Image (spheres, rainbow, N blue to C red):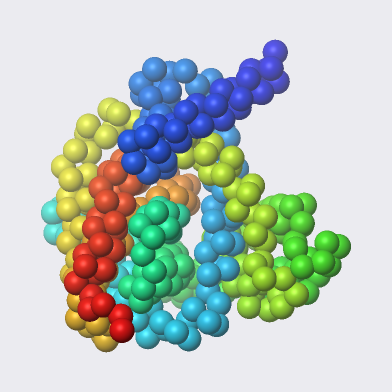
Length: 389
């Protein structure tokens, strides 16, 4: 009986996700937005159609789905991309991450929120939505220096964001003295990088051999699951480990063009379930109680992106026409933010409901308003740029 309910629920969720995807295409809303809204609709705060057991799937699915995303992000950090647009990519990504943490965290603290909770929310606000931004760039058909730099930024800024988040979590978590939180950051980030190297180095040379020039689906799944599982077992960042392994494989695997291209074919079912269950976890009563906090968080994050994006663009010496566009283009926020919130909620249970509810609610908002802003930024730069000779 229980297995029958489990399999039936999975099938219904996949079909519901497909329905949400088609609505997204018809309305030109991001499919992630539709999945979050659909998840909320069938969740306990609305219609209550999901069985209780479905709540237990969220955590393991999030590890798998976000590790896949991390692998693909790492695969974008190739020598070619960094050489061509390196200065702008690093300047803007670092500026946006630092500015978002300071403005959102500091602003919420000044409004009376617990400084530790405000700092964590500021760190979570650094996350972007690489998939959403990539979709907008692809759909726009625009390929220029701005779109290439933007792609590089979204591939690397979540790395800085994860590092800042890990540092903030270590500082907020109750430790004795300063040595322990600093050591926790070293273990979390350093251990994850080391694990990514340990997995990525042999994978770069061994994958794509059975079927020359093309990593197999089984190889891709195996490496992703091992990375996620060992990261959880060793209690290091599975996101940083996945990004590191993906970057190592992308740069060292010379015998196939695109490392783990197969991951792109298998990630969507996991991502679909992840966002559906994330939406289902949204608690309407808690969201109502956090009304002012949600509005403040959204407003401060928008301000931080505009200000820090402008500063980073000037430091990166990008063309004048592009300076005002990076902030709006980097507004989308999705899975990595929810992953950070999940980790923070587990580490500090007392703040868990606030962190999860606010992050999921803000993710829905930014997945609605963010992609149109990215599209506008692309069109703005394209229209204002001088024609190529």
